[in-house]
Length: 325
Length: 295
Image (cartoon, rainbow over all chains, first blue to last red; front, top):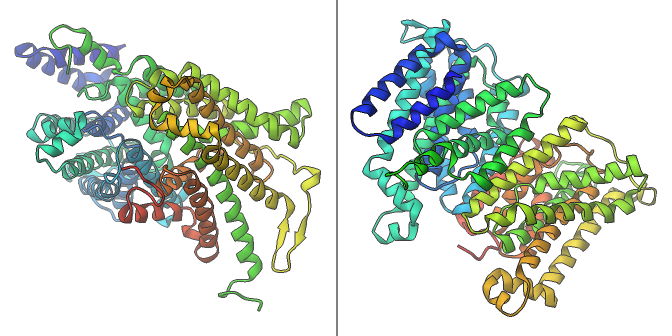
């Protein structure tokens, strides 16, 4: 399957430096550009949206060591904002996406301010509880239309020029959004800011003793991650022309944890691989009689017990020279 | 006086009773979570699913084996406790050496498996479970009507909660348990089998969830997803109370249940989120939780 080959290429990309890296990046981009001619574009767009979502989540767990169990609130919440802005207020798609990102960032600021007061397991429980609050709000507020969700969201024209109702145009826009988000995460991780985050992950008291105000770093990472998750959610709302309750449930928060865990926490490409695998698996399972949650749960258990580095992490670990990240 | 703050007293007390019942379940579940967390450092995400399993075991016993409510009250927690023992022995045990977050993720996976499997078999609709004959009917207290079964649920959970508190805080076994929570290596050196104690603690904690499930079966229906949203409220209760104290978990659980009931009377739209709002406020004022002692 072409997805598999893409994944192996990703691995290679992460490992080698110098010109092969440039070559591989080029080949990869070419593949991404050509992919919609071989595969169903909506499926690919779904993969890209979830990949961006998982990358945003990974910025927190993988590079700052913070497990948020409430990222669905940003993803699904932003989807509602984008859908409402575009459908009810007649905003352009770019304005809708901007609003979605900003709304998710603002939510992230509030969540973050509360959650960073506690650490570890409590952090996870607080984010989970807060996101459940967003779920109940989404269930009850009139503008979300309860169980129906916001349906028939028009895709519109990006910058008034590109007609997004054409699947290929939409695909390339989603691809551009994903690449932009991914580049931002790459830049963040490799910046001095990213280094401080890693220091906090490894040993927070020590980072504090070195004079870093770790709470501020954690909060900024949280807001950034929430905003990017929001961008992914807003994009998904445009792709599927729908914002629904599914995206704000805590099962969705669990799903993004799984994607990241499966692909490899703390690796840049892991979440992309994980998202592609989980989305593929789910669309495959949908046509069988196997219960999806049971399979997902079983993968969770296996990953946690045997496979904590994830696919990309395991490959990086096995290859010589870069044994440790 | 037929009106109290513009609300008929029947409605007010009715909702308060409902709140008290919810509070009893919060107390039972957060108690189990606190006991498990204290000993294993694991946040048991599967707690809600095991509560559901408890209710289902009761229903299955009644439907297929003809075992009634009172039998189920003993057997279902036992079954759930044994399931817990098996899970701890085979799976959870492997994760004590790594980051505690993996325990949370593992139990989350288990919750998905349990809920998914039951939903696959029994569908999403609830199965009714009859109230036992002995507890049918009710009494008129003058200001409100008290269904006997609901009174029983509150009394039984209070009794179990206080019994657990007594066992942990006032008995020899409880003293070992508390000592092992503080410093397992030292307690082990004194010749106490800590690994067995850890397993039993997990088994006991989830058995409490199973018991709550049986108590809940006649009130709510028995359905595969009955625990999935409840458990998140219980997490919020745990954050509010802090996991430091057993009594704290009980008081917080009951108190928040009552508060939720009150909200249902005065501002029903907010009743779903009031616990989370309180959690946010508590985090701002006293981050360690009302009864918490750790930082």
